[in-house]
Structure formats: C-alpha cells, structure tokens
Amino acid sequence: MRLRYWLLVALSCWTLSLSADELGLTPAETAALLQQQGEQMLFVDVRDPVEIMFVGTPLGIDANIPFMTVDRHDFDADNNRFRLHQNPEFAAQVAAALEAKGLDSDALVVTMCRSGSERGEPSARYLLEQGFSNVRFVIKGFQGDARKDGPQQGLRTLNGWQNEGQPWQPRIDPQTIYRP
Image (cartoon, rainbow, N blue to C red; front, side, top):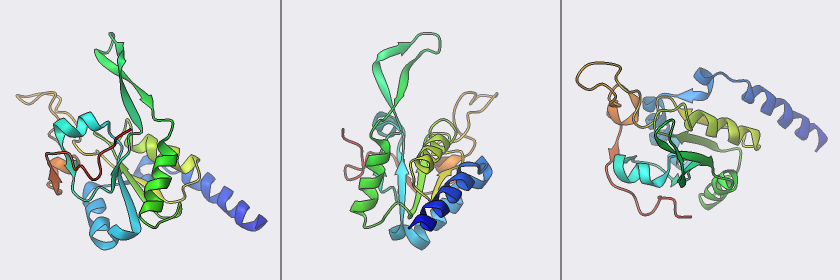
C-alpha cells in the first residue's frame, strides 16, 4: 500500500511537469483515439454550455463539464467580456462521468475547450493535480486560432477540431450538455 502511494506521488510529479506538447493531442490524434478506444476513455468538452449552443461540439463527446463558467453578473469592462470562474465541482463531476461510463481515475481523460490554451490545458493539469493519472487535452481545441489579418481577421478559422475537418455538430447534444 505504501509503495503504491509513493509510485502515485512520483507519477503525479512527472505528469505535472509535462510540457504542453507532451500533454496535448492533436485533433486528429484525439479522433483516432475515439475510434480505437472510445469506450475506455472519457472525452470532455470543458467549455461553458452557451459557447456550445452557438458554436457547436465534436461528435464523440461523453460529457460537457465546464472547467470555467461564465458569470453573467461580473462584467470585465477592460476586456469587454464577462468574467470566468472555475467550476468548484469540476473534478467531482469528471469522476462521476468516469464512474457512469464504468471507468476509474486511471482511465484516459481528454479535455477540449475553444482554443486549447485557456481551459483545455489548464483543466488537464488541474485533473492531474487532483489525482487523475492519465489526462490529456486537445491542442488548438474546438475552434483553433484566430486569423491575425486579412478579410477573416479575428475569426477562428486556422486550425482546431472544427477547422481540421473532424466530426462535429452545430447543435447541443441534450444527452451530454451540462445542466447545473
């Protein structure tokens, strides 16, 4: 028992020190994993459900569990947006989704947000800190990067799940969408 504890501590330290490249999966790698071992993994869309309602979601998502939720009462005038606050139940909700699928905290969990950097990678690192041992995130997320110039400047059309042609749908899936 004591050896298992120290092995888990060592593994946690190693996984927390992984670079984004080591922790991240491309959209194509994630889609292939879903095809090969979809029943043995958990694929989580960590965006706020309102984002999904307006932008769409990947096919194959097991659950929408927001890592950060939009606080519509807390407006950030400097950045012209509502503030995001961490979902305090995130780890427990991921654990429940794993259990519902017959999996434990050692199963592969892949998280995805809009662009991969603001919530995808942080949510993966957070789950590792909480004791989940096999967590990755989708690099460039669902929509990817915004164009820096040209007629589509500011639009997220460069990469990511949607722009790389991975399967997605424009509507909410009532079976997977987050309902607090």
